[in-house]
Length: 107
Image (cartoon, rainbow, N blue to C red):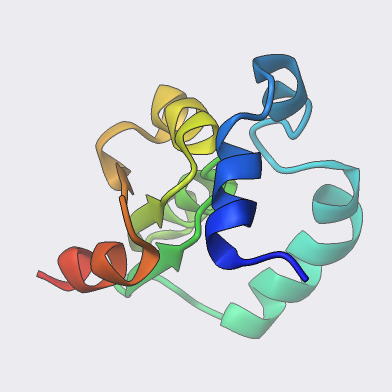
């Protein structure tokens, strides 16, 4: 069984080309299966504050502001957060520890 720390280390050292393959709207399954369901479940997010905990490449931190939400994404994996910051910028933060990042984002 993989520990959280091992998973963070694995995602954090992912090659840039692999991270870029996710694209700004997520990978194929996100774009064609998950996004529509997730956005329907979230409903109208205009004016809402959203914490994208474990934001990965930041695709929700990019999608939801276009729908009127104020979003902060946190992510402990270096390779993913570096990519997320390219487009989502200040809306995403790197967390050295996932729960510390979530607590920090609430402030």
